[in-house]
Length: 140
Image (cartoon, rainbow, N blue to C red; front, top):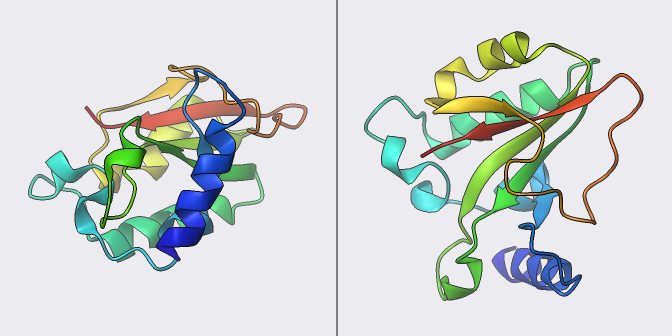
């Protein structure tokens, strides 16, 4: 699974965008057992286990007012030789308000929920549906 993810990321990077690549939720989490792969600085400070983290995000993704949940890949993904590529943010496409999204992710020990793409939108990221906004869930 890791090799498939790395190949997807490599393909996305070849788009030549300065914005970091994003991948589908399942592409990032299925097969991932590396607890340090996302929000590692929050592990002992309220962040749930990786399995529970993924379960919360799947619940959000399955809501009728959510179009997609994507994982933003950290810039140093290529340096991860034998570990899972690091994720640095979660992007939620939804018609809900930002304050509602903040409530959805309260148990993930996030540092905040921002509107839009703080580091730029990767060209392979889908367009939001009419009436939907993109929110970035961030850690440090």
